[in-house]
Image (cartoon, rainbow, N blue to C red; front, top):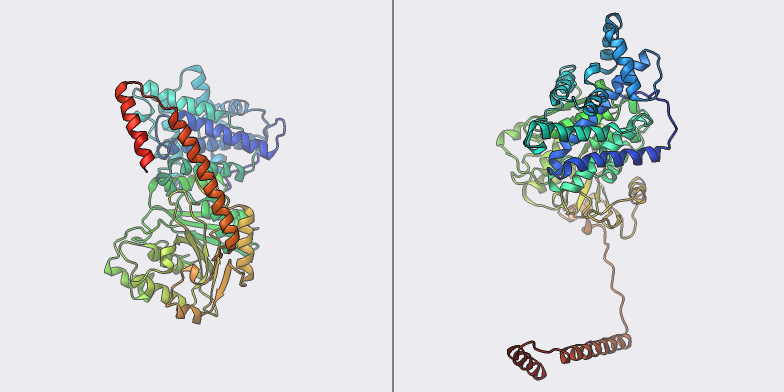
Length: 546
């Protein structure tokens, strides 16, 4: 069941760029209403939830008009058509059946976003009507279960009284009602959703970083996973720490058979899990094509029933997270063959091994981790050695510092494969591939293209990339720290002694000029009282002695 359908709304054509700009601005204006009352990591639930509700509501009105073979100039007109036909008992029954079949849910005419905004303008809107609509959607399909649970419509942070709570939500809904989504393809609206998630992450720093991977990193990882398989039908992708689902959803961008992709993802934090579900639907992913779980990835292996392995694994797990590392995990098939477990203080390799376990024999895995996994000793070294000895580690890419919202540390993308016939490792030092941003550094499309081209050629590039033999890696005691393999050292140019003497003379001259200006300024100083003058005179005499 595809959630998005092309609208038949009639109006003046606009460019996709104009529509996107209008969309982004409207979304941000709606955020402004809540921004002064709560932190970004709190208001995201309200705003994103209401955006999603409008999306579902608009889809209902569109589907009604499609099935009645009617065009409409506004959603208000579509609303009237819906009300008229819903009032007809004979038509209503068939209409409900068709809507449930096509969309998987029904919103009654009195509870659509358009109708509730009408009530707001008339001064008759009640929060309970919105709450009822949320409940109806959640009960329509198991994929919608508890979808709006993070939206507390009666929370004090919306206002101290029911009237103020009502007013806050009303203002947000009025702002969102102006959104023109009718001219967008499904992914444009989904991309706007991603844009907002990114803005939230930027605005609230570490608190929001948990659910967002910067698009540049997502694009790079996804293209690597899909390289040479863009036309493959029935691809399956898996992200066991999916956050908002941005890594998974990039598969649509780089596959020529996007409608056949199966998405599998797991997320521990319930609110973030709900974001991922909404995000899937906003990107037009059919209900039957995504399978998401709300559990602890390390404590509860998932999936454990077919399919359990995937064509692509994409991961950006929380860095250096503490985990139980209970001895019982040594019998867990995900970890048992390595003889040791990732340390309790750092679950990085536990996440990596989980993802690798669920990778098909001919699959490709890309995971983002801190650089420490490349060189730390003890148990981590043993795991790293085991992976290297079986040829599992294909490529190591060093990313620039400060490109993630939740950390300023540099990170690395590790590419793993199961079907390799050799044990060499390709190193790419992309730490300088960025442009400076206000809060975060950014990787442009040119930077990504350069890394991808280098990855595909798998050839040495001076000061950028090196193909290390297994023997070379053994000599380095299985240490994968990138500077050991890619020398980026730039020698300082040697300055002739004559030039150096000239520079020193110029500096001495500048110092003399500054000291003369300071002496002049001190000579202008006058004490405002006899005591102050006496103190100033003593100070100036003291300076002469220095």
